[in-house]
Image (cartoon, rainbow, N blue to C red; front, top):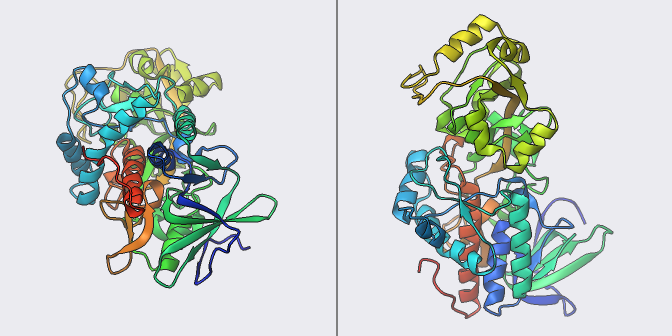
Length: 470
């Protein structure tokens, strides 16, 4: 069996194939959310995961999920609703995000989060700062504040509800009949053996294409030289299957970059240090953009600097916002976070002229407005902290075109009979450019998309779940 994802037409799964009502490719946040909802309703569901333990892009993320109108928010007195959330998404994407998905996801995410809460996932809301573009405190996190903890909790909930989890199984082929109805997924095991899983509905919750260099060069030329900080499983399988099926693709120019990838350590430095008053300074001792616009487009800005690097510079007030985050603790323990008593020490760490750096620091103060449009609320206070960073590609935000029910659409805009997609496999809500990514859009699409896809899958096999918008 070749390594390239394949669609085979007119091949029956055979009498010995395992059969389930719903098969889900990928056990990240999207697949696990869908599996939990389906299994809870008594629908036989199997998650097919290529890794030995579920991880994917979700495990590499911060694990922060944006949601508006949740029970957790209401308990904290946070005034928020899907309409405000949708407006924030479109404002960040300059009105180019797929409106049908923006509406569907912002309405579904609160019921999805409340449902996860019933299954033992105890969420908190980050309220120490606002992420760029969000008008309310709506970033939900587990107490561990990590994507790995989120995947572990979702895996436990889904399997306890009755979902089957098949690990170390890479879906290499999809079998379809003459009417473009999916009949089975063919899985390849590490020892080269194969298993055929027949299904009534197939949900692609597998991946984007950030780990496929050829696709990155073709669709995201600005990131062709960027560090890839995502999961190796993002190999573009969903896009490749879509091309072979004649599916429509959308928003392939959208992606989540990050301008704060510690180098050479290779760990994320939370953008909270920027929102808490920090700045990015290049090797010449200068700032070069408005850091509050967003961490995704900052990747492009950082890569354009000398040596494709910059330094995150912040103080104790900003550091206190992230000191409990696992990634930041890892950076500190590996000495990636440098402590500088004053401008001279900071200039020595950066390797820049101390006078140039001094002029940069002097421009940061209460009410100051820089040439990039950033308005500062306060000055940075010594001692300073500095982390050397570069721009990275995390995950893609384009893929298979889907409708509001997460049904994959063909080139004519019509849905395939029983093929669904969400999360990294499908188009997201970030428009078609890096600047359209609103913090948390990836996990929004994954969790809300998985929740909606479950309802659609259930309906296609004659079962009704509580509508996602309720």
